[in-house]
View 1 (tube, rainbow, N blue to C red):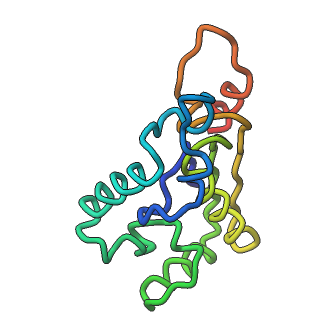
View 2 (cartoon, helix red, strand yellow; view 1 turned 90 degrees about the vertical axis):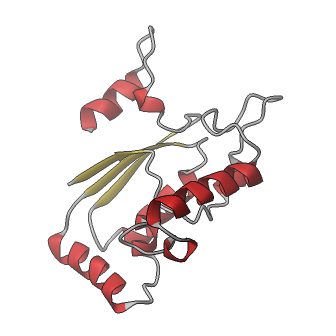
Length: 150
């Protein structure tokens, strides 16, 4: 199976949670790992993604940007990716924070694939990007359970 922590699934950076979960230094809310303003954050990450995949044209290719596996595939080789996943029934598990920038694409990915392949998302209230990886001197049961499940 596939196990992920706060996966970046949509390299085109189209999720509305780039805005709704943007960090606010005044209220100390949102995703503390993505501190740039929403527009700048989206622009910077999209530029990194284009460098990673080779061009802006490939930001929605399912083999490079998994979020798009769950969307209507327009190219025949992309449609084959979903078909192969459905036949293989490879389970996908993701752990995400409700306050993180990527929460929207993670939840949308899960809802679109549910019933087609085994997929499960653990969403933790108030948590930020990759929160289970942060060490704490205090016991944090939710983090411990997420790491055990990983």
